Length: 455
Image 1 (spheres, one colour):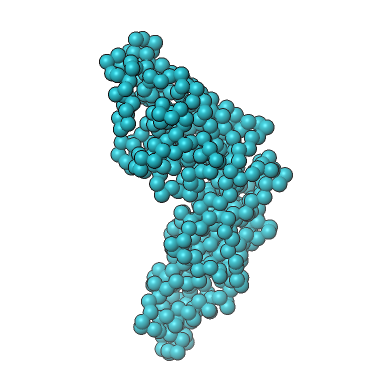
Image 2 (tube, rainbow, N blue to C red):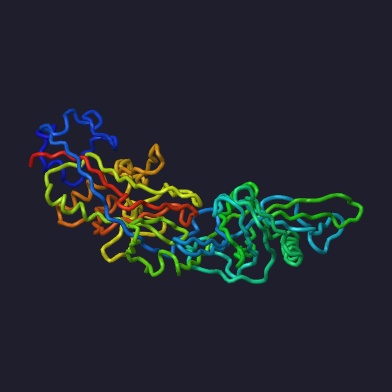
């Protein structure tokens, strides 16, 4: 087949030949080509160890998930991190007071309880101390605004607090009773709305709230705002003394805008001295992907340039990168990540979730064929110490652009714009997560299966 196809036709713009291959295989049938390796078909294999470094990215977007982070956590590798969470809340369902000036079945507030469930906590095991306070915010949190982890909100008067030793595995539900003054103030606001026929409490935007970590906190929790148990419950009862043993429940859900502020202190850690957007190498040679600490791994593709220059008559049949990582006890491994383009001036096409993924991240092969915005997918190895990512058409793109300009560049399929690429930066699609991955030294391996063709 290879002898019958001309190289010119194989690489012309708009035409990409993909021969299906399974990564990690070297037999003739697995390669999808009915020739032995080393035969006249010139089917070959090459492997590169990709140089990797650490990079610090402070201002990550944190308003893309229905969760907030709260607490403090110290790690000798990455330093100390403090997190605060801000959120909006809205009326969901339940009885409303008929107005403060009415009688008969007018209600009075008994208490308001804030309840939130943690979907993840670090450290993951043992006992820890969690401390935070609730406050109203001065900022109403605009629903259309974009919020980054570097923006701190200003609290007003404290309206509730939590301070308790917890079991990080079992204690995932947090309950806080609002102070009486705030409970009465919120109840009065609802009463005024309910007594006005021109207003609807369901569409009312209440003042946003924030959870601010206490100095004694030793853990960070990711609170799931969409959990069935995460809500505000107002307990009320009739003013009428004849209505005995009657309690009404009115619920409020955490919907609308929410995000987390993250403050980092790397002094005394292995990353003391790292500068934002500049490569930083550890003495161990390891690299890390820890969104909570603002750390990502950047890996270079320059090893491809010499190979591309020496092999100008090939088709890339299959391209796979393996990421070898270390097991951790205190943190879950971040397995789902994306590779963002990085330009020669060290700026990154991102780092927030890209509005145009085709021009910002490495896409899956299926995305190029269907124009769906799917990033390259990863597969966890059986030993759970390696992630395999395949994106053959991306590397075929790099190859085709290199032949045109003798430099690594990427042609954005949806716009036709050519972008120079210096490195790829690994980042989480979940914004700031409590998961992280520590990659082994020389643990990033690019494998290419390719076919030589006639010119």
